[in-house]
Image 1: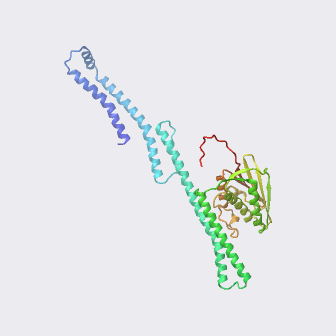
Image 2: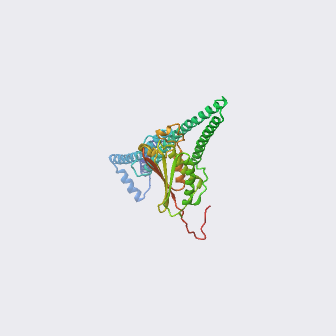
Image 3: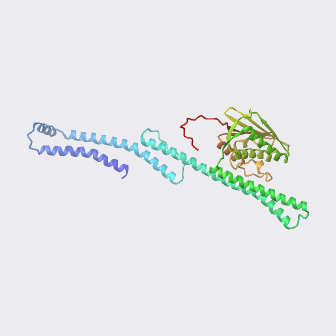
Length: 373
């Protein structure tokens, strides 16, 4: 039964029950033979009522009932209509509306809750659309970057089969190129797999206590050997006291450093590249700065460098490759370690990538403290 019908019935009940009750009492008293003094007095009063008095009383009763019913109706029905209309819009997938309610009653609170739900649904829908767009972009980037090494592998392998490379030296060069392109494809696939695992939180981190100075000393030594073959100079500066301990996953932390350094090498430009690696003790954390004198990043690109699948115009150079998710992976790993990462850059001058790691602190526990493993 609709509220309008219920209120109409309530109106009738409010009006007619008192009237029927009075009328019935009047009839019973008129035809009653009782000699009770009170009943006789009441009977005389009823018989003295004029028609105007009865009509006036009935009108007052009807007016009062009408005001009460309208007050209840206007307090309930408009709010319910708003919620019904909002529910229909949500059912049709339309979330571009607002539910305005300035009251303080229960229905107003329900409208406000409904509006919060609508905002949450709209935010989730927009995030889903954005994720889908990023996934399409990621697939496009991967397809684009896989096409180049595959084309090279096909070309050089056909050259070997057709006998184009006749000398042993040329054959070796062809095979080496095929091997390098295969490694490039493998790196792209591994990077994509890692990001998917990070995105779904399926990476089992192996956190350990590590001496930051020793760790980054070994890390930069390994990098120096690789970078020397690319004519890249690596400078290492340790400004800590050498005894700083952090809790980190050594393998994933090395991935962070390698991705940042490889990104610097990828966009070094035509000049000789110098990478300066520095670590600082900032009190509660360790800050790692990786500076380069490469191409730099455009100012309009800076807010998006950690956004997955985002790549500046210069990165579309097919000679550079990359899936566009390297720095996104770096950001996720650093944040999973409880740190933060940021970038500053000047186009044509260079880029500084900085991230922090929380220092290890010993915590004293009571003997009966439960240690969760």
